[in-house]
Image (cartoon, rainbow, N blue to C red; front, top):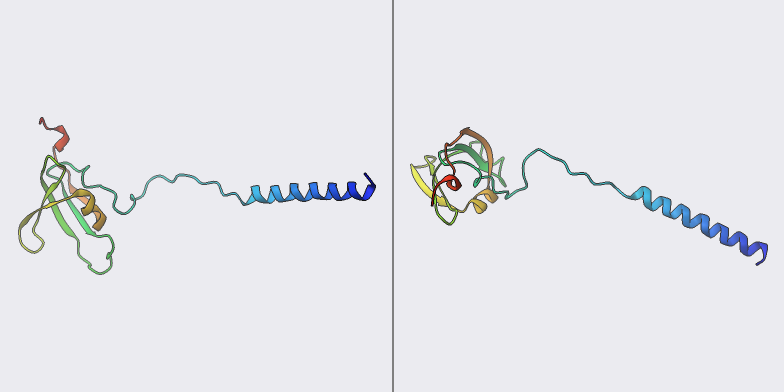
Length: 123
């Protein structure tokens, strides 16, 4: 090889090394953050005990309504549906699918913790 060819090869190696360093410096290290609220639709309702009293608000329209809704967990079905008591408009018991309910409602605060969970019962 002549001297010019050797210089070109050395320059290519230097360029490749420089490119590799740039690629490595562009890599972002991802870290898991803990705490905070779960993702939208996270099923927080199934984890609450029977008798729990809690406040919610619509998750997608947080600023449309300034008030919150109060619910009481009164029962559960064998299929995992939850019966909620609410006196927002009229006193009423409503059955909800916890996953679908949590997609639309954000848990704001637990006012009173319940005493038993469906999974604790004999059945």
